Image (cartoon, rainbow, N blue to C red; front, side):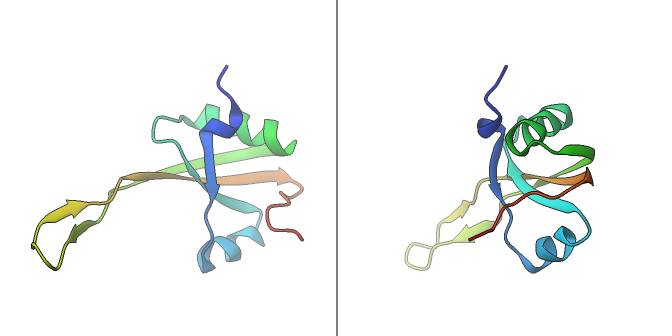
Length: 95
């Protein structure tokens, strides 16, 4: 079995993700090869909560252009997971 901390890369910090946290939906950046069952198992193993639903979304990397040489490049593509909890919450940002 894969290590759960290899599947969950980082939590997403944005206004939208904070608004969703109040509804019991948490947003994470995950490995691009991770499947929904792997994400569910990883969240349940790390934080000991019950997950009711996992939605994923692939985001294409943005194209960027350098100023000096006018070359184009691309930022890496990422995958995000919206994890809905059945009961409880995840203590992500506590002091």
